[in-house]
Amino acid sequence: MGAVYKPDELKKNKPAHPVVRMLEQIAGLPLAGLVAVFLSAAGLVWFAGTRLTHAVDRIARRFDLGQAFAGMVLLGGITSLPELAAVTTSSATGDASLAVNNLLGSAAVNVLLLVLADIVFGRDALTGVIGKPATLMQGVLGMMLLALVAVIVLAGDVDAGGVGAGSVFVLAVSLLMLRLSSRYERRDVWRPVEEADGEEPQAEDDDGSSLRLLGGVALLGGAILVGGALLSLTAEGIASQTGLSTGLVGFLLVAVATSLPELSSVTEAVRAKRYELAIGDIFGTNLFNLSLLAVADLASPDGPVLASTGPFEVIGALTALLMTGAFVVGLLERRDRTLLRMGYDSVAVIAIFAAGVSAMAMVMPAG
Image (cartoon, rainbow, N blue to C red):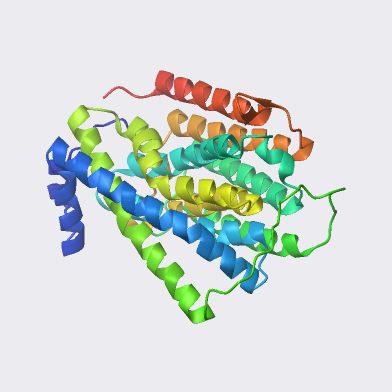
């Protein structure tokens, strides 16, 4: 943890698959080439993420899934594909710190994206127009999962046949949480006194057959996966040529790169007045991302990835937890007051993120 990522060192344990070798060659391009590929991949991800929001919205209405659940499972799951590509590649090349911090950094950056969505919403606090309890459930479950990861890091993960027992437990818990959340949206546990104006606009669904709609979503997901893999590899290559530490690169640079699908989908969802879809996307993505720790273990040649982590990763997990908590409080209070076009919860999230990154920089290992 803390070592500088160097593509040349991958030759020691180079995977045999030609696709992996090609991706490693991309990571070793000159800086100008890396930036060009990075920007091109970002454009592809933005294009696909924007259109994915409308496709998932139509699926939710056609199959009566509920906006929060569709945002969590469909939008959140598909926009987690770049993290899947990044984590698998990083773990396979022996860089456990980059893999773990990409996931934890994405959890924090994803919540930070809700601040941008709040600014796009503009007139009131975004959390003030959310009137359904499913988003609250998703936020609380995400906080619990982040706390669980922090506990496992502090206690130390145990190798259980090539994967970490803690990572497998996180996967099992995340699946249980997804099931719990899906059932919760169907239950009439409580009703808001009044729905916000324009919260759930009903539109005609005239987008052709269900098979065509699902096929379009699959194609957009494939584009996001390819673009996300390129974003991850080029970000790692840029980091190697600038001498930044693996932990900080994973938490910030790679996390921001792989969160571009969420940025495009969330802002588009807010513009379309699909507010539960937007927040469900972020909370759902974080549940999916943390479950990828088990995938990182399977790809890692050096055993459980959480076994090589420490205070840096604990602070990262707790930072994402506190940021999520600030928005959960905002969802409970439902106040409309804003500051600089942001709700007070968004302002708190920015402050927590800045403090968390500062604390992580203080404990970051040298190297």
